[in-house]
Picture 1 (spheres, helix red, strand yellow):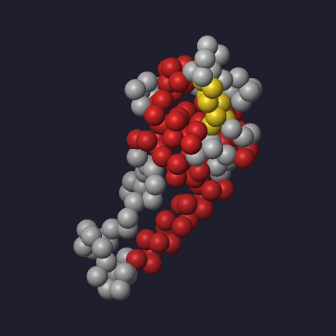
Picture 2: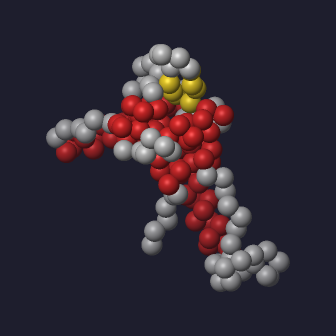
Length: 148
């Protein structure tokens, strides 16, 4: 079973993770972030602009401009980033491939809603400080770190 996120969320999470990993107050160019995270440079500026409008990152123009987190990594959640770039789609009935016909519910409605709520709650409870700390633990266990 594959429950995943779209490309926009994937790329945005990578970019914000990079900014959280390098949270020193300095602005980083979209190009540098794209290179460090293997995100296509054609996608990242648009995503960072969306994240700036959502208050996740802040941007500055000019020679020393770029992007940085708008708040400390401990105050930016994974869910916030995902919701900024991938708004919740209209629900689709698992049985019919369209809207549910039984008063907005079908046999899969309850378990599907419960699973979605659990997934959403976990993303809401996970901050980028948590992700950076976990990455550090994993790097230590593996004996080193890839530069991100």
